[in-house]
Length: 89
Image 1 (cartoon, one colour):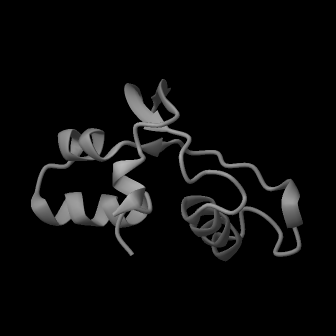
Image 2 (cartoon, helix red, strand yellow):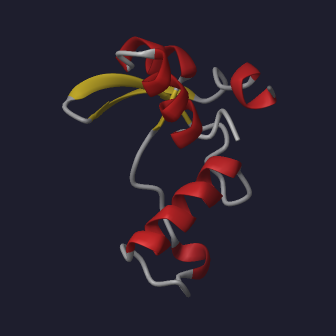
Image 3 (cartoon, one colour):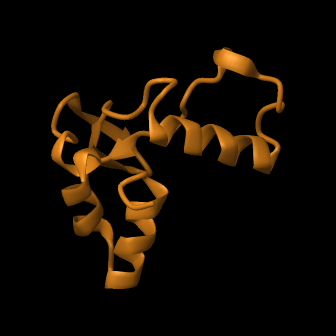
């Protein structure tokens, strides 16, 4: 729940996926859930070596929950995106 409540902290606007989006920096530090999830995803896909250590940098923004609901076309897609961006575990 705190992931959603605190999402407005560190809010910024960025251009990604071909549009202007609202994102947050909350949870994107090396100890944050989203950071760890994205790092594991990139290692599993072979985008970065498994021994990258602390030099890994996020390449995708963490969208705000309300931005996810605006983009999602169905309830199932919204739930999948909330999981993808670390709001649901």
